[in-house]
Amino acid sequence: MKVAVILPAAGLGTRMKPSDAGSPAAPRKQFLLLDGVPVVVHTIRKFVACPLVSEVILALRPEDRPKVDELIAAESFSKPVRTVDGGDSRQASVENGLAAVAPDTDIVAVHDAVRPFIDPETIEETIRSAAETGAAIVGIIPVDTVKQIHLHKITGTLNRDRLVLAQTPQVFHIDILRRAYDQARQDGFTGSDESSLVERIEVEVTVVAGSDRNIKITRPSDIDLAQLFLREEKERPR
Image (cartoon, rainbow, N blue to C red; front, side):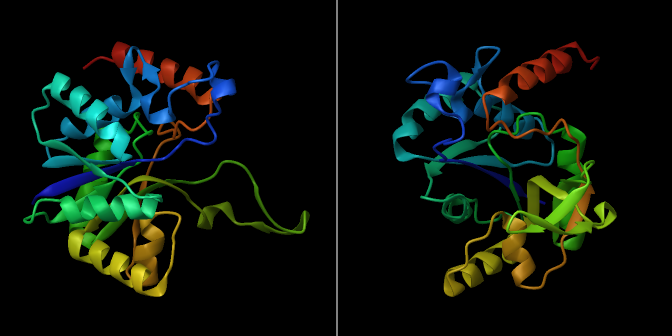
């Protein structure tokens, strides 16, 4: 089984405002430093360390590729880690990554480049689940009560037992993901994640239990929590 990982990292990080980050030229979220290392490099390390992963592909803004290629070279990764041009949207970036995977790839995992605290066990479990069922994503049950609203008025309370908050990785047989992208392109459909595209072609998607530590770094306040998680990872017995 050959598994390719696509990390879409072409976003501008509009929620990480430069003024909030303390500098008029603050780096975008994927390039913020944790312990002196860009967030995206921490994320790459997690997937390179997974024995099931064959290669990692980053979809980046063209102007970022030379910088990231230098970071990759400096890491001397034990597996192929490559960059491709990203698109104007997450969906376009993943599609560009999908076009660049090795021809003998069986499984494709898509993961947010700014989720560096994904557990190795969860990566493996999600890949194995997708290999068996065709499609699997990581998700967590919300702990807060979820209300449905219309025009700022509550119209109902949703049953949390039937809800999950989708995370990544989202993992699929490559033919399923390609079919989902082809259909979305034909229909002019844009989804919020890969699963939403796969659901449209009536493929069942399995949910693997995730963790609230698998945070997506999108706001300045996330950095303090990320630094705490990184310290805990370093102190954890191996």
